[in-house]
Image (cartoon, rainbow, N blue to C red; front, top):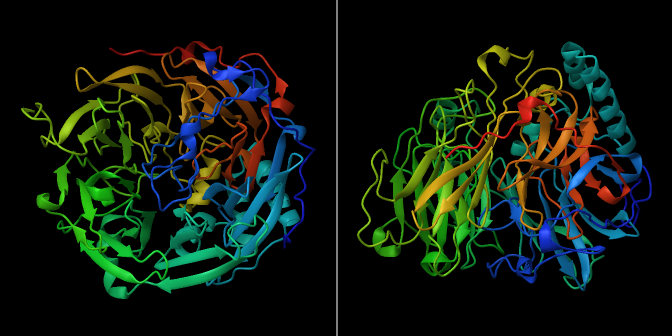
Length: 593
Protein backbone atom coordinates (compact mmCIF):
# COMPACT_ATOMS: atom_id res chain seq x y z
CA UNK A 1 0.00 0.00 0.00
CA UNK A 2 1.03 3.62 -0.57
CA UNK A 3 0.69 5.88 2.41
CA UNK A 4 -0.23 9.53 2.75
CA UNK A 5 2.83 11.76 2.85
CA UNK A 6 5.20 9.16 1.43
CA UNK A 7 7.50 10.00 -1.47
CA UNK A 8 7.27 7.60 -4.39
CA UNK A 9 10.55 5.98 -5.35
CA UNK A 10 11.90 7.20 -8.66
CA UNK A 11 14.74 5.65 -10.57
CA UNK A 12 16.66 8.78 -9.80
CA UNK A 13 16.13 12.26 -8.46
CA UNK A 14 14.43 14.40 -11.08
CA UNK A 15 15.14 18.07 -11.62
CA UNK A 16 12.80 20.58 -13.17
CA UNK A 17 13.00 20.65 -16.94
CA UNK A 18 14.31 23.60 -18.89
CA UNK A 19 13.24 23.17 -22.53
CA UNK A 20 15.44 23.86 -25.53
CA UNK A 21 14.81 24.19 -29.22
CA UNK A 22 11.20 25.13 -28.62
CA UNK A 23 8.87 26.46 -31.21
CA UNK A 24 9.94 29.91 -32.44
CA UNK A 25 9.18 32.73 -30.08
CA UNK A 26 7.29 30.46 -27.69
CA UNK A 27 10.43 29.69 -25.73
CA UNK A 28 12.29 31.90 -23.31
CA UNK A 29 15.68 30.98 -21.91
CA UNK A 30 15.27 28.50 -19.08
CA UNK A 31 11.46 28.69 -18.91
CA UNK A 32 8.42 27.34 -20.67
CA UNK A 33 5.96 29.84 -22.00
CA UNK A 34 2.51 29.24 -20.49
CA UNK A 35 -0.01 31.71 -21.90
CA UNK A 36 -2.42 32.95 -19.24
CA UNK A 37 -5.39 31.74 -21.29
CA UNK A 38 -4.80 28.13 -20.34
CA UNK A 39 -5.77 28.92 -16.75
CA UNK A 40 -9.44 29.17 -17.74
CA UNK A 41 -11.56 26.31 -19.01
CA UNK A 42 -14.56 28.49 -19.79
CA UNK A 43 -16.83 26.21 -17.74
CA UNK A 44 -17.58 27.84 -14.36
CA UNK A 45 -18.46 24.49 -12.74
CA UNK A 46 -15.17 22.75 -13.56
CA UNK A 47 -11.79 23.34 -11.92
CA UNK A 48 -10.34 26.53 -13.37
CA UNK A 49 -7.28 24.77 -14.74
CA UNK A 50 -5.88 23.58 -18.05
CA UNK A 51 -6.75 19.98 -17.18
CA UNK A 52 -10.17 19.45 -15.61
CA UNK A 53 -11.59 16.45 -17.54
CA UNK A 54 -10.20 13.21 -18.96
CA UNK A 55 -9.74 14.85 -22.39
CA UNK A 56 -8.10 18.01 -20.94
CA UNK A 57 -11.13 20.33 -21.11
CA UNK A 58 -14.89 20.39 -21.61
CA UNK A 59 -14.56 20.89 -25.38
CA UNK A 60 -12.56 17.71 -25.91
CA UNK A 61 -9.81 19.53 -27.81
CA UNK A 62 -7.01 17.24 -26.55
CA UNK A 63 -4.47 20.06 -26.63
CA UNK A 64 -2.49 22.34 -24.38
CA UNK A 65 -0.78 25.64 -25.05
CA UNK A 66 2.07 24.37 -22.88
CA UNK A 67 5.37 23.99 -24.72
CA UNK A 68 7.06 20.58 -24.73
CA UNK A 69 10.79 20.40 -25.55
CA UNK A 70 11.64 19.75 -29.18
CA UNK A 71 14.68 17.59 -29.87
CA UNK A 72 15.63 13.92 -29.83
CA UNK A 73 16.16 11.99 -26.61
CA UNK A 74 16.73 8.62 -25.00
CA UNK A 75 14.85 8.23 -21.74
CA UNK A 76 17.26 7.50 -18.90
CA UNK A 77 16.69 6.21 -15.36
CA UNK A 78 17.28 9.74 -14.09
CA UNK A 79 14.53 11.10 -16.35
CA UNK A 80 11.79 8.61 -15.39
CA UNK A 81 9.54 8.38 -12.39
CA UNK A 82 6.83 5.75 -12.17
CA UNK A 83 4.11 5.72 -9.52
CA UNK A 84 2.83 2.12 -9.72
CA UNK A 85 -0.89 1.67 -10.26
CA UNK A 86 -3.35 -1.03 -9.20
CA UNK A 87 -4.88 -1.55 -12.65
CA UNK A 88 -5.27 0.49 -15.83
CA UNK A 89 -5.27 4.14 -14.76
CA UNK A 90 -6.53 6.79 -17.18
CA UNK A 91 -7.83 10.02 -15.58
CA UNK A 92 -5.25 12.56 -14.43
CA UNK A 93 -6.67 15.97 -13.51
CA UNK A 94 -5.04 19.00 -11.94
CA UNK A 95 -5.62 22.32 -10.22
CA UNK A 96 -3.82 24.84 -8.04
CA UNK A 97 -4.70 24.65 -4.36
CA UNK A 98 -3.43 27.53 -2.26
CA UNK A 99 -0.77 28.22 -4.90
CA UNK A 100 0.44 24.61 -5.15
CA UNK A 101 0.07 22.38 -8.24
CA UNK A 102 -1.99 19.35 -7.21
CA UNK A 103 -2.87 16.27 -9.29
CA UNK A 104 -5.83 13.96 -8.88
CA UNK A 105 -4.83 10.62 -10.40
CA UNK A 106 -7.06 7.60 -10.74
CA UNK A 107 -4.80 4.61 -9.90
CA UNK A 108 -7.22 1.83 -10.84
CA UNK A 109 -9.44 1.43 -7.79
CA UNK A 110 -8.43 4.47 -5.77
CA UNK A 111 -7.92 8.19 -6.17
CA UNK A 112 -4.48 9.59 -5.30
CA UNK A 113 -3.86 13.28 -4.62
CA UNK A 114 -0.26 14.17 -5.50
CA UNK A 115 2.07 17.12 -5.70
CA UNK A 116 5.69 17.63 -6.65
CA UNK A 117 8.41 18.21 -4.06
CA UNK A 118 12.01 18.68 -5.23
CA UNK A 119 11.46 16.75 -8.44
CA UNK A 120 9.55 13.92 -6.75
CA UNK A 121 5.85 13.14 -6.86
CA UNK A 122 4.55 12.98 -3.29
CA UNK A 123 1.22 11.52 -2.22
CA UNK A 124 -0.88 13.93 -0.17
CA UNK A 125 -4.00 11.80 0.28
CA UNK A 126 -5.90 8.89 -1.18
CA UNK A 127 -9.38 7.37 -1.15
CA UNK A 128 -10.55 3.92 -2.26
CA UNK A 129 -13.76 2.78 -3.87
CA UNK A 130 -15.21 -0.69 -3.19
CA UNK A 131 -13.82 -3.37 -5.52
CA UNK A 132 -16.57 -5.82 -6.41
CA UNK A 133 -14.60 -7.83 -8.97
CA UNK A 134 -14.30 -11.56 -8.21
CA UNK A 135 -10.88 -13.08 -7.49
CA UNK A 136 -9.13 -9.73 -7.17
CA UNK A 137 -6.19 -9.44 -4.78
CA UNK A 138 -4.19 -6.20 -4.73
CA UNK A 139 -0.43 -6.24 -5.29
CA UNK A 140 2.23 -3.99 -3.79
CA UNK A 141 4.01 -1.26 -5.77
CA UNK A 142 7.11 -3.47 -5.82
CA UNK A 143 5.10 -6.37 -7.26
CA UNK A 144 3.66 -4.07 -9.90
CA UNK A 145 7.18 -3.10 -10.99
CA UNK A 146 8.06 -6.80 -11.12
CA UNK A 147 5.04 -7.40 -13.34
CA UNK A 148 6.26 -4.72 -15.75
CA UNK A 149 9.73 -6.29 -15.90
CA UNK A 150 8.28 -9.74 -16.50
CA UNK A 151 6.02 -8.46 -19.28
CA UNK A 152 9.03 -6.81 -20.92
CA UNK A 153 10.88 -10.13 -20.98
CA UNK A 154 7.97 -11.85 -22.75
CA UNK A 155 7.64 -9.05 -25.29
CA UNK A 156 11.36 -9.02 -26.03
CA UNK A 157 11.28 -12.75 -26.83
CA UNK A 158 7.93 -12.42 -28.68
CA UNK A 159 6.48 -15.09 -26.39
CA UNK A 160 2.77 -14.30 -26.68
CA UNK A 161 1.71 -17.61 -25.12
CA UNK A 162 4.05 -17.14 -22.15
CA UNK A 163 2.75 -13.61 -21.62
CA UNK A 164 -0.87 -14.78 -21.70
CA UNK A 165 -0.24 -17.54 -19.18
CA UNK A 166 1.62 -15.15 -16.90
CA UNK A 167 -1.14 -12.53 -17.00
CA UNK A 168 -3.78 -15.16 -16.22
CA UNK A 169 -1.80 -16.25 -13.17
CA UNK A 170 -1.59 -12.80 -11.54
CA UNK A 171 -3.72 -12.08 -8.44
CA UNK A 172 -4.73 -8.54 -9.49
CA UNK A 173 -6.75 -9.67 -12.54
CA UNK A 174 -3.98 -8.47 -14.84
CA UNK A 175 -5.50 -9.99 -17.98
CA UNK A 176 -8.79 -8.15 -17.59
CA UNK A 177 -7.29 -4.89 -16.26
CA UNK A 178 -8.61 -2.72 -19.09
CA UNK A 179 -12.13 -4.17 -19.00
CA UNK A 180 -12.13 -3.94 -15.20
CA UNK A 181 -11.90 -0.15 -15.43
CA UNK A 182 -15.11 -0.03 -17.45
CA UNK A 183 -16.80 -2.28 -14.88
CA UNK A 184 -15.36 -1.05 -11.56
CA UNK A 185 -12.96 1.85 -12.10
CA UNK A 186 -13.03 5.19 -13.89
CA UNK A 187 -12.39 6.01 -17.54
CA UNK A 188 -14.08 9.39 -17.78
CA UNK A 189 -13.92 11.83 -14.87
CA UNK A 190 -14.13 15.53 -14.04
CA UNK A 191 -12.63 17.82 -11.42
CA UNK A 192 -15.21 20.34 -10.24
CA UNK A 193 -14.79 23.98 -9.28
CA UNK A 194 -14.50 22.90 -5.64
CA UNK A 195 -12.01 20.15 -6.58
CA UNK A 196 -14.39 17.23 -6.21
CA UNK A 197 -13.44 14.26 -8.37
CA UNK A 198 -16.49 12.68 -10.05
CA UNK A 199 -16.09 9.48 -12.03
CA UNK A 200 -18.18 6.64 -13.39
CA UNK A 201 -17.91 2.99 -14.39
CA UNK A 202 -20.29 0.14 -15.03
CA UNK A 203 -23.57 1.59 -13.74
CA UNK A 204 -22.04 3.51 -10.85
CA UNK A 205 -21.30 7.21 -10.41
CA UNK A 206 -19.17 8.37 -7.47
CA UNK A 207 -17.88 11.60 -5.96
CA UNK A 208 -14.71 12.05 -3.88
CA UNK A 209 -14.21 15.33 -1.98
CA UNK A 210 -11.40 16.98 -0.05
CA UNK A 211 -12.16 17.69 3.60
CA UNK A 212 -10.73 21.21 3.20
CA UNK A 213 -10.68 22.57 -0.35
CA UNK A 214 -8.07 25.21 0.55
CA UNK A 215 -5.56 22.75 1.99
CA UNK A 216 -3.56 20.73 -0.60
CA UNK A 217 -2.86 17.96 1.95
CA UNK A 218 -6.46 17.71 3.11
CA UNK A 219 -7.76 14.10 3.33
CA UNK A 220 -9.97 12.67 0.58
CA UNK A 221 -13.31 11.04 1.29
CA UNK A 222 -15.71 9.05 -0.87
CA UNK A 223 -18.84 11.14 -0.22
CA UNK A 224 -21.29 9.72 -2.77
CA UNK A 225 -21.58 6.45 -4.67
CA UNK A 226 -24.81 5.62 -6.47
CA UNK A 227 -25.92 2.85 -8.83
CA UNK A 228 -28.22 3.99 -11.62
CA UNK A 229 -31.57 2.21 -12.07
CA UNK A 230 -31.65 -0.87 -14.31
CA UNK A 231 -34.33 0.68 -16.53
CA UNK A 232 -31.75 3.15 -17.88
CA UNK A 233 -29.81 0.32 -19.53
CA UNK A 234 -30.45 -2.03 -22.48
CA UNK A 235 -28.22 -5.11 -22.40
CA UNK A 236 -29.61 -6.67 -25.56
CA UNK A 237 -29.04 -3.54 -27.61
CA UNK A 238 -25.46 -3.23 -26.38
CA UNK A 239 -24.73 -6.92 -26.91
CA UNK A 240 -26.17 -6.89 -30.45
CA UNK A 241 -24.25 -3.84 -31.62
CA UNK A 242 -20.84 -4.24 -29.94
CA UNK A 243 -18.39 -6.77 -28.54
CA UNK A 244 -19.44 -5.85 -25.00
CA UNK A 245 -21.82 -8.16 -23.13
CA UNK A 246 -23.81 -5.56 -21.17
CA UNK A 247 -24.92 -1.95 -21.33
CA UNK A 248 -22.95 0.48 -19.17
CA UNK A 249 -21.97 4.10 -18.63
CA UNK A 250 -19.51 5.42 -21.20
CA UNK A 251 -18.95 9.16 -20.75
CA UNK A 252 -19.22 11.92 -18.14
CA UNK A 253 -18.91 15.70 -17.94
CA UNK A 254 -20.58 18.83 -16.55
CA UNK A 255 -22.58 21.35 -18.57
CA UNK A 256 -21.85 25.06 -18.42
CA UNK A 257 -25.06 25.53 -16.47
CA UNK A 258 -23.97 23.11 -13.78
CA UNK A 259 -25.49 19.67 -14.39
CA UNK A 260 -23.60 16.40 -14.32
CA UNK A 261 -24.20 14.41 -17.51
CA UNK A 262 -23.45 10.77 -18.32
CA UNK A 263 -24.21 8.69 -21.40
CA UNK A 264 -24.71 4.97 -21.85
CA UNK A 265 -23.51 2.52 -24.44
CA UNK A 266 -27.15 1.67 -25.18
CA UNK A 267 -28.00 5.20 -26.30
CA UNK A 268 -29.13 7.25 -23.31
CA UNK A 269 -28.02 10.66 -22.04
CA UNK A 270 -28.75 11.25 -18.35
CA UNK A 271 -28.56 14.38 -16.19
CA UNK A 272 -27.79 14.26 -12.47
CA UNK A 273 -27.38 16.74 -9.64
CA UNK A 274 -23.61 17.21 -9.32
CA UNK A 275 -23.77 17.30 -5.51
CA UNK A 276 -26.28 14.58 -4.62
CA UNK A 277 -25.90 12.52 -7.83
CA UNK A 278 -29.69 12.21 -7.99
CA UNK A 279 -31.01 11.47 -11.49
CA UNK A 280 -32.93 14.41 -12.99
CA UNK A 281 -33.78 13.40 -16.56
CA UNK A 282 -32.87 11.00 -19.37
CA UNK A 283 -33.00 11.06 -23.17
CA UNK A 284 -33.02 8.02 -25.47
CA UNK A 285 -31.93 8.04 -29.11
CA UNK A 286 -34.57 6.97 -31.62
CA UNK A 287 -32.64 4.38 -33.64
CA UNK A 288 -33.09 0.72 -32.71
CA UNK A 289 -29.37 0.12 -33.32
CA UNK A 290 -28.06 3.51 -32.21
CA UNK A 291 -25.27 3.38 -29.64
CA UNK A 292 -22.98 5.82 -27.86
CA UNK A 293 -19.42 4.51 -28.10
CA UNK A 294 -17.57 7.53 -26.74
CA UNK A 295 -17.94 10.42 -24.33
CA UNK A 296 -19.09 13.92 -25.31
CA UNK A 297 -18.19 17.61 -25.27
CA UNK A 298 -20.05 20.45 -23.57
CA UNK A 299 -20.15 24.08 -24.58
CA UNK A 300 -21.33 27.55 -23.60
CA UNK A 301 -23.82 27.54 -26.48
CA UNK A 302 -27.57 27.33 -25.81
CA UNK A 303 -27.31 29.22 -22.52
CA UNK A 304 -24.63 26.86 -21.28
CA UNK A 305 -26.67 23.71 -21.79
CA UNK A 306 -25.17 22.29 -24.98
CA UNK A 307 -24.06 18.65 -25.01
CA UNK A 308 -22.33 17.42 -28.18
CA UNK A 309 -22.59 13.66 -28.43
CA UNK A 310 -22.25 11.33 -31.42
CA UNK A 311 -23.97 7.99 -31.79
CA UNK A 312 -22.81 5.47 -34.38
CA UNK A 313 -25.20 7.10 -36.89
CA UNK A 314 -25.89 10.67 -35.82
CA UNK A 315 -24.24 13.77 -34.41
CA UNK A 316 -26.37 15.51 -31.75
CA UNK A 317 -26.47 18.77 -29.94
CA UNK A 318 -28.79 18.21 -27.01
CA UNK A 319 -29.69 21.05 -24.68
CA UNK A 320 -29.94 20.84 -20.89
CA UNK A 321 -32.16 23.58 -19.50
CA UNK A 322 -31.90 25.46 -16.20
CA UNK A 323 -33.76 22.65 -14.43
CA UNK A 324 -31.63 19.81 -15.80
CA UNK A 325 -34.21 18.68 -18.34
CA UNK A 326 -32.88 17.44 -21.71
CA UNK A 327 -34.27 18.83 -24.98
CA UNK A 328 -33.79 17.73 -28.60
CA UNK A 329 -36.06 20.28 -30.36
CA UNK A 330 -34.89 23.16 -32.52
CA UNK A 331 -36.78 25.70 -30.43
CA UNK A 332 -34.47 24.85 -27.52
CA UNK A 333 -31.37 25.16 -29.71
CA UNK A 334 -30.87 21.42 -30.23
CA UNK A 335 -30.14 19.72 -33.53
CA UNK A 336 -29.12 16.38 -35.00
CA UNK A 337 -27.44 15.38 -38.25
CA UNK A 338 -26.65 12.00 -39.81
CA UNK A 339 -23.16 11.11 -40.98
CA UNK A 340 -21.63 8.11 -42.77
CA UNK A 341 -21.68 5.21 -40.28
CA UNK A 342 -19.74 2.76 -42.48
CA UNK A 343 -19.29 -0.87 -41.55
CA UNK A 344 -18.29 -2.69 -38.41
CA UNK A 345 -14.52 -2.71 -38.08
CA UNK A 346 -12.12 -5.07 -36.26
CA UNK A 347 -10.65 -4.13 -32.87
CA UNK A 348 -9.82 -1.68 -31.44
CA UNK A 349 -13.08 -0.32 -32.92
CA UNK A 350 -16.05 -1.35 -30.77
CA UNK A 351 -18.67 -1.09 -33.50
CA UNK A 352 -19.51 0.93 -36.61
CA UNK A 353 -19.72 4.72 -36.75
CA UNK A 354 -17.37 7.21 -35.18
CA UNK A 355 -14.58 6.19 -32.82
CA UNK A 356 -14.03 9.71 -31.55
CA UNK A 357 -15.42 11.86 -28.78
CA UNK A 358 -16.55 15.15 -30.40
CA UNK A 359 -14.08 18.06 -30.34
CA UNK A 360 -15.08 21.72 -30.49
CA UNK A 361 -13.28 24.11 -32.86
CA UNK A 362 -13.63 27.82 -33.53
CA UNK A 363 -13.99 30.30 -30.69
CA UNK A 364 -12.87 33.61 -32.20
CA UNK A 365 -15.43 36.26 -33.21
CA UNK A 366 -14.89 35.53 -36.93
CA UNK A 367 -14.21 31.79 -36.66
CA UNK A 368 -16.52 29.13 -38.02
CA UNK A 369 -18.08 27.48 -34.96
CA UNK A 370 -17.59 23.73 -35.48
CA UNK A 371 -17.80 20.35 -33.77
CA UNK A 372 -15.54 17.69 -35.26
CA UNK A 373 -15.50 13.88 -35.42
CA UNK A 374 -14.18 11.15 -37.70
CA UNK A 375 -16.88 9.05 -39.36
CA UNK A 376 -17.24 5.31 -39.93
CA UNK A 377 -16.28 5.12 -43.61
CA UNK A 378 -13.71 2.49 -44.60
CA UNK A 379 -11.39 5.40 -45.29
CA UNK A 380 -12.69 7.71 -42.63
CA UNK A 381 -13.57 11.33 -43.24
CA UNK A 382 -12.80 14.19 -40.92
CA UNK A 383 -16.27 15.71 -40.51
CA UNK A 384 -17.00 19.26 -39.33
CA UNK A 385 -20.55 20.19 -38.32
CA UNK A 386 -21.84 23.71 -37.80
CA UNK A 387 -22.32 23.62 -34.05
CA UNK A 388 -24.51 26.70 -33.75
CA UNK A 389 -26.49 28.50 -36.45
CA UNK A 390 -26.02 27.31 -40.03
CA UNK A 391 -24.88 30.40 -41.98
CA UNK A 392 -27.59 32.22 -43.90
CA UNK A 393 -27.73 31.10 -47.53
CA UNK A 394 -25.68 27.96 -46.83
CA UNK A 395 -26.36 25.13 -49.29
CA UNK A 396 -25.76 21.47 -48.56
CA UNK A 397 -22.52 20.31 -50.18
CA UNK A 398 -22.64 17.43 -52.67
CA UNK A 399 -21.99 14.07 -51.01
CA UNK A 400 -22.82 15.34 -47.52
CA UNK A 401 -25.71 13.72 -45.66
CA UNK A 402 -26.90 16.96 -44.04
CA UNK A 403 -26.68 20.73 -44.51
CA UNK A 404 -25.42 20.74 -40.91
CA UNK A 405 -22.13 19.28 -42.22
CA UNK A 406 -19.85 22.22 -42.98
CA UNK A 407 -17.33 19.95 -44.74
CA UNK A 408 -15.85 16.48 -44.68
CA UNK A 409 -12.64 15.18 -46.19
CA UNK A 410 -11.28 11.67 -46.58
CA UNK A 411 -8.13 11.00 -44.59
CA UNK A 412 -5.59 9.89 -47.19
CA UNK A 413 -2.51 8.13 -45.79
CA UNK A 414 -1.09 7.29 -49.20
CA UNK A 415 -0.99 4.20 -51.43
CA UNK A 416 -1.30 0.80 -49.78
CA UNK A 417 -3.38 1.95 -46.83
CA UNK A 418 -6.93 1.18 -47.92
CA UNK A 419 -8.54 1.09 -44.47
CA UNK A 420 -8.24 4.16 -42.25
CA UNK A 421 -10.25 4.14 -39.02
CA UNK A 422 -9.61 5.54 -35.56
CA UNK A 423 -10.76 4.84 -32.02
CA UNK A 424 -9.11 8.07 -30.87
CA UNK A 425 -10.38 11.60 -30.46
CA UNK A 426 -9.50 14.27 -33.00
CA UNK A 427 -6.87 16.56 -31.47
CA UNK A 428 -7.56 20.17 -32.43
CA UNK A 429 -5.72 23.44 -31.92
CA UNK A 430 -6.78 26.66 -33.62
CA UNK A 431 -7.55 25.62 -37.20
CA UNK A 432 -5.49 22.39 -37.01
CA UNK A 433 -6.95 18.90 -36.61
CA UNK A 434 -4.78 15.81 -36.08
CA UNK A 435 -5.96 12.20 -36.55
CA UNK A 436 -4.45 8.71 -36.38
CA UNK A 437 -5.28 5.32 -37.88
CA UNK A 438 -5.73 2.34 -35.53
CA UNK A 439 -6.59 -0.47 -37.98
CA UNK A 440 -3.82 -2.87 -38.99
CA UNK A 441 -3.62 -4.15 -42.58
CA UNK A 442 -5.24 -7.52 -43.33
CA UNK A 443 -1.92 -9.36 -43.62
CA UNK A 444 -0.92 -8.23 -40.11
CA UNK A 445 -4.26 -8.93 -38.45
CA UNK A 446 -3.89 -12.52 -37.28
CA UNK A 447 -6.00 -13.18 -34.22
CA UNK A 448 -4.12 -13.07 -30.90
CA UNK A 449 -4.47 -15.95 -28.43
CA UNK A 450 -6.89 -13.90 -26.33
CA UNK A 451 -9.00 -10.83 -27.10
CA UNK A 452 -8.52 -9.14 -23.69
CA UNK A 453 -7.74 -5.48 -24.51
CA UNK A 454 -4.88 -5.17 -21.99
CA UNK A 455 -3.15 -8.22 -23.47
CA UNK A 456 -3.70 -7.19 -27.10
CA UNK A 457 -2.54 -3.65 -26.42
CA UNK A 458 0.73 -4.95 -24.98
CA UNK A 459 1.30 -7.05 -28.10
CA UNK A 460 0.55 -4.46 -30.78
CA UNK A 461 3.71 -2.83 -32.02
CA UNK A 462 5.85 -5.09 -29.83
CA UNK A 463 5.35 -8.67 -31.01
CA UNK A 464 3.28 -7.87 -34.11
CA UNK A 465 2.65 -4.89 -36.42
CA UNK A 466 -0.15 -2.45 -35.65
CA UNK A 467 -2.30 0.04 -37.47
CA UNK A 468 -0.20 2.90 -38.81
CA UNK A 469 -0.66 6.38 -40.14
CA UNK A 470 -1.30 9.94 -38.95
CA UNK A 471 -2.39 13.11 -40.69
CA UNK A 472 -3.08 16.77 -40.07
CA UNK A 473 -5.73 18.90 -41.74
CA UNK A 474 -6.33 22.61 -41.46
CA UNK A 475 -9.68 24.38 -41.57
CA UNK A 476 -9.75 27.11 -44.22
CA UNK A 477 -11.99 29.79 -42.77
CA UNK A 478 -12.42 31.61 -46.07
CA UNK A 479 -13.50 28.45 -47.91
CA UNK A 480 -15.32 26.71 -45.06
CA UNK A 481 -13.41 23.58 -45.96
CA UNK A 482 -10.68 21.17 -44.84
CA UNK A 483 -7.28 20.95 -46.49
CA UNK A 484 -4.99 18.03 -45.72
CA UNK A 485 -1.51 19.35 -44.98
CA UNK A 486 0.39 16.08 -44.66
CA UNK A 487 0.22 12.39 -43.88
CA UNK A 488 2.68 10.06 -42.19
CA UNK A 489 2.17 6.38 -43.10
CA UNK A 490 5.34 5.41 -41.21
CA UNK A 491 4.23 6.13 -37.63
CA UNK A 492 1.87 4.12 -35.46
CA UNK A 493 -0.28 5.25 -32.52
CA UNK A 494 -1.62 2.11 -30.84
CA UNK A 495 -4.32 3.11 -28.34
CA UNK A 496 -3.16 6.32 -26.69
CA UNK A 497 -5.11 9.52 -27.38
CA UNK A 498 -2.67 11.93 -29.09
CA UNK A 499 -2.25 15.55 -28.06
CA UNK A 500 -1.23 18.81 -29.68
CA UNK A 501 1.31 20.99 -27.91
CA UNK A 502 0.34 24.44 -29.11
CA UNK A 503 3.38 25.98 -27.44
CA UNK A 504 5.70 23.72 -29.46
CA UNK A 505 3.51 23.61 -32.59
CA UNK A 506 3.52 19.84 -32.82
CA UNK A 507 1.25 16.83 -32.64
CA UNK A 508 2.46 14.08 -30.29
CA UNK A 509 1.79 10.34 -30.34
CA UNK A 510 2.86 7.47 -28.09
CA UNK A 511 3.77 4.65 -30.44
CA UNK A 512 6.29 3.46 -33.00
CA UNK A 513 8.04 4.06 -36.26
CA UNK A 514 6.88 1.22 -38.54
CA UNK A 515 10.50 0.32 -39.35
CA UNK A 516 11.30 0.00 -35.63
CA UNK A 517 8.67 -2.17 -33.97
CA UNK A 518 9.15 -2.97 -30.28
CA UNK A 519 11.10 0.25 -29.83
CA UNK A 520 8.52 2.58 -28.32
CA UNK A 521 8.78 6.31 -28.97
CA UNK A 522 7.02 9.53 -28.19
CA UNK A 523 6.98 11.19 -31.61
CA UNK A 524 6.34 14.91 -32.12
CA UNK A 525 5.48 16.10 -35.64
CA UNK A 526 5.41 19.71 -36.79
CA UNK A 527 1.82 20.79 -37.39
CA UNK A 528 2.58 22.49 -40.72
CA UNK A 529 5.10 20.11 -42.27
CA UNK A 530 4.67 16.76 -40.52
CA UNK A 531 8.42 16.52 -40.02
CA UNK A 532 9.63 14.71 -36.92
CA UNK A 533 10.78 17.41 -34.50
CA UNK A 534 10.74 15.45 -31.23
CA UNK A 535 11.34 11.86 -30.18
CA UNK A 536 11.73 10.30 -26.75
CA UNK A 537 12.80 6.67 -26.92
CA UNK A 538 11.35 4.38 -24.27
CA UNK A 539 12.53 1.17 -25.92
CA UNK A 540 10.89 -2.13 -24.97
CA UNK A 541 9.89 -1.23 -21.41
CA UNK A 542 6.05 -1.46 -21.14
CA UNK A 543 5.90 1.32 -18.55
CA UNK A 544 5.92 3.62 -21.61
CA UNK A 545 2.75 2.03 -23.00
CA UNK A 546 0.00 4.60 -22.42
CA UNK A 547 -2.73 1.91 -22.50
CA UNK A 548 -5.72 4.01 -23.68
CA UNK A 549 -4.80 7.15 -21.71
CA UNK A 550 -4.74 10.62 -23.23
CA UNK A 551 -1.19 11.98 -23.44
CA UNK A 552 -0.81 14.82 -20.94
CA UNK A 553 1.93 17.15 -19.71
CA UNK A 554 2.31 19.34 -16.65
CA UNK A 555 2.85 23.10 -16.61
CA UNK A 556 6.63 22.60 -16.80
CA UNK A 557 6.32 20.56 -20.02
CA UNK A 558 7.02 17.17 -18.43
CA UNK A 559 5.07 14.24 -19.83
CA UNK A 560 2.79 13.18 -16.98
CA UNK A 561 0.02 10.67 -17.58
CA UNK A 562 -1.26 7.20 -16.75
CA UNK A 563 0.35 4.21 -18.46
CA UNK A 564 0.00 0.43 -18.37
CA UNK A 565 1.80 0.17 -15.02
CA UNK A 566 1.40 3.53 -13.35
CA UNK A 567 1.64 7.29 -13.50
CA UNK A 568 4.69 8.14 -15.59
CA UNK A 569 6.58 11.42 -15.37
CA UNK A 570 9.31 12.18 -17.91
CA UNK A 571 11.83 15.03 -17.68
CA UNK A 572 13.59 15.74 -20.98
CA UNK A 573 16.22 17.83 -19.19
CA UNK A 574 17.57 14.64 -17.57
CA UNK A 575 17.57 12.61 -20.81
CA UNK A 576 20.41 11.77 -23.17
CA UNK A 577 20.34 13.73 -26.41
CA UNK A 578 20.64 11.67 -29.58
CA UNK A 579 20.56 12.19 -33.34
CA UNK A 580 17.18 12.28 -35.05
CA UNK A 581 16.22 8.58 -35.39
CA UNK A 582 13.80 9.34 -38.22
CA UNK A 583 16.13 8.90 -41.19
CA UNK A 584 14.54 6.14 -43.29
CA UNK A 585 13.02 6.86 -46.73
CA UNK A 586 9.69 5.58 -45.41
CA UNK A 587 9.52 8.59 -43.14
CA UNK A 588 9.02 10.94 -46.09
CA UNK A 589 6.14 13.28 -45.37
CA UNK A 590 3.31 12.90 -47.85
CA UNK A 591 1.60 16.21 -48.46
CA UNK A 592 -1.78 16.33 -50.14
CA UNK A 593 -3.46 19.29 -51.75
